[in-house]
Length: 420
Image: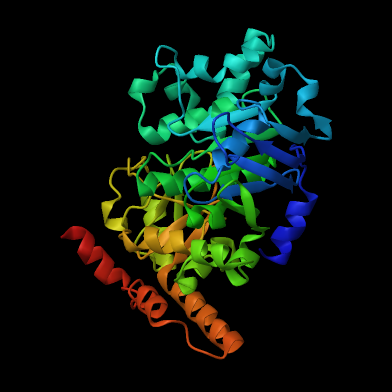
């Protein structure tokens, strides 16, 4: 994280609450070994903490004890300094957002009704609920006018998961619990949803506890990472940087695994690099003027933005037709500014432009990151790593990294490729 980002983060308004687990255990009858054995930790307010570990380590059990879906056998859990047992179960759960794999939407309810369940239980009036539904749909990147009346069967897996996140945020809870929320979608949608979560968190600063089996996802999303062994024994609880650079024990080292060169890409963010500027056009602009602007900038392509400055397409100049700029209708894969360089490489390798569009809050356009900038940065990271360790990285790591980096193609090559 850059100095500027760190300062901005510390100044941002935190709406989350601190979670403390003190000597928490869960023992099921008939089982000798506890599912969770005397776990103690603190989740700071406004941070994302990722629970990661092998199957059966107790990470989901620990998560569910926070909202009392599973009652602890012993120990104390507090949220914002208040013991969770001081509230009735239903009252507690209405103050904790809960998001699980696939969104778990009610199939007979529209998107709007799914999101409004908890606000209705809390007695909100209809106008406030409608306003909140539209606000949340916009926050998770879904057009309210288009999606509020749809049913889950009319949504893609990624859209259902977005609605699930919106439902978890509906009553503006200080704490959000997420149980492998992105595990049931394809890799591209998974990256988009991860970026969406980072963007939402940058704006809202909730306290988020998320269970995952994927160490790369944990490193990308977490302000802190909790690696659990069997029985929910803490192998390591620290920042992603420390987890990668200094595993606490042999279990943590084995779980993080080999390929440290590639995993370092999960620590570097798109925001760490300088973005490039390119010609942009807003839907409705005069096409001739846009072409003149692109020609003056020596750009072969133009990024088309909607009225809210969100990228909707990246056509080549020769593809601009008609008197005014229209929405190209392209499925443009953008990168959030907090996306990792690993994600940047994945996105650019399937892009026809040798780069990727970078967005910030509410998907607003920020600039473009190009292939050569990323590869130059990676090479510098490699040199720094070698200087620190005074030894070359393992052969496997070098080959894995080298296989993803090649000389950046020219605009001419990219344009020809898009025609074929």
